[in-house]
Length: 363
Image 1 (cartoon, rainbow, N blue to C red):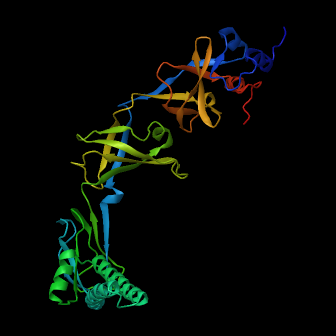
Image 2 (image 1 turned 90 degrees about the vertical axis):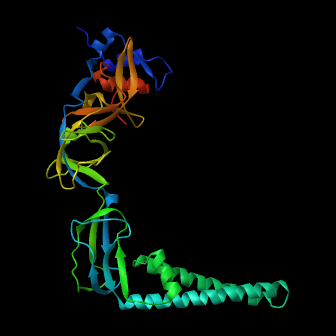
C-alpha cells in the first residue's frame, strides 16, 4: 500500500496563485486522506442553569472618605454610624487656627483685587487718552492678574476645606472671621463609619467619616476559572431572592494562583432590596447556549482567532471571539451558532492551505 503525503496533497488541492483564500475546497474523501475530523459545536451550558454567589458592595463611585481639611480640634459631631444624610447636611465641626488665617488672607486678597480692578480701569482710560506709557499699562495689568490669581487660589482652598458658596458670601458680606469649619455631606449617603470623637486633636490627615451611597451598588465575587469562563461581560444575571437583574461589567483576565479563581463584578440595574455586605445568589438570565470548542480547533491566522467552518465542498475561515477555560476547551463568545460544524482535527493542514503553503502551524 502506497503512503500519500498529506502535505503534497495539500499543494495539489490549493489553486495556483491563490493566497489567503476565504474558502478552502476540500472534498469529503480528501478530508479523510488528510485526517481532517469535523465535529459539531457543543453546548457547554444553557442560560438559567449556572448559579453564582456574589457579595453586595458599594460601587467605586459610591464611597466617600471625608478627611481632616486643616489641623484643629473636633468641636461638634452631628452624625453617628448608620445615619442617613443629604447633600449639605453637617457632619462635624472642626475648630482650626489655620482656618482663621486662611479666611483673613482671603479677605485681604479680595480687597487687593478690588483695588487692582479700579486701577486697571483707570489706566485703561488714561492709555486711550495717551496720558500714560504702554509700559505702565502692562505693569497695571500684571498687578491685576496676580491679584486675581491670588484671590482665586485662596477661594479654592476655602472651598476645599469645607466652605460653601453661601459661606463665602456670608464671609464677604460680614467680614466676620471665625475658627469653626463645618464639614458637610457631599451626597445622599449612609454614614458607614465615624472614627473621631468630640475633642479629638487633628493633625490634618485623619479620616473624619466614611460614607456610602445606597443607590450605587455593585456585586463582586470569586468564581472558579472553569465557571467564570462560561460568562462574558454584558451577560445578564437574575437575583434568585428578589426581582433585581444585573449586568456583568468586569471579568478579570488574571487567575488567582492560590485559589485558582477569577474576579467578577456586576452592576444591578435596580439596587432595591440589596444591602451592602449581603451574600446573594444569581442565575445567568441571558446568552442562550454557551458554546464550547476544543482548543486544538482554534488557530491563529493573521493575528486573529479563527476556526474552519464546514460547508458544502470544503471549509470557510470563520473569525471567532473565544475565552480559554483552562480545561482543554474554549468558550465561544461570538462567531459561531448552535449546529455549526468545524474542523476539530487537521487544522494545521487547513491553515497551511489558507496561507498557500504545504501546511504547518508556524507563525
